[in-house]
Image (cartoon, rainbow, N blue to C red; front, side, top):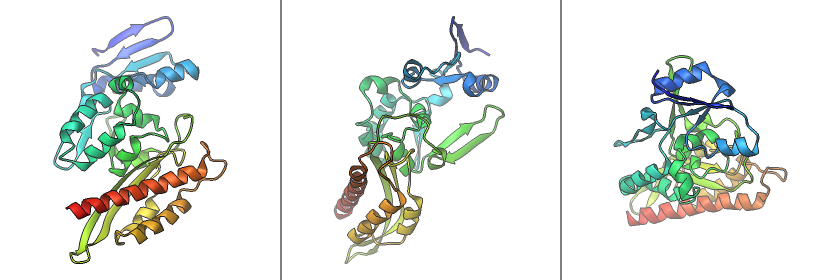
Length: 278
């Protein structure tokens, strides 16, 4: 194994340079016996303020497999170790070729400071599973798929991002609503300019203990016309499926409900404008 190792008085520091070395380390030191770090933007806060102690830190900044960033005809491949600054520079190049790239780029305007973007990774943002993440709703609405490698064997799994967020994993100060939407429409009548919903996905942050995607509503909308009446019905369905009460963390229940509905209407207006110009 060619990894770099440093032993101090209070912890051991490892820096593997390949995915196999990382997997071997995690196999040797599973669970809380070791902690993965990249930009150290989250772990250092936990160590300093939440008194999290870990005797082994594994830096994954030099693993080539985690640095891949490429675009194909129908997908975007982002390595877990890609920083937000590097991702942003590529999205600027690709934004005119892919609406998802533009959507992700727009959302990144609200993500942290320049200093944090320079070191924070996309994988770290996903793993933190913050319910108020600005980025995760966009990835979930785009039907992002995670590739997971097991430390105990050579098995590789692929799962939908929406199935990865099982519960809240970090303590966040308050709930601020974020949202992402995607819809596929089919034109029915060129005279009346009617469009039918073929598929639709929307995801919200800050409305639950995790990033949430109301799957039942999405299924009900398939086959309906893309009209203001449909959107009004969706408002009511959202309130029922994504329920908040007065004891929900973050408070401001009515305000957050209004934001959720406002984001949906803004998306509806945006799509209608795009259809008129197409």
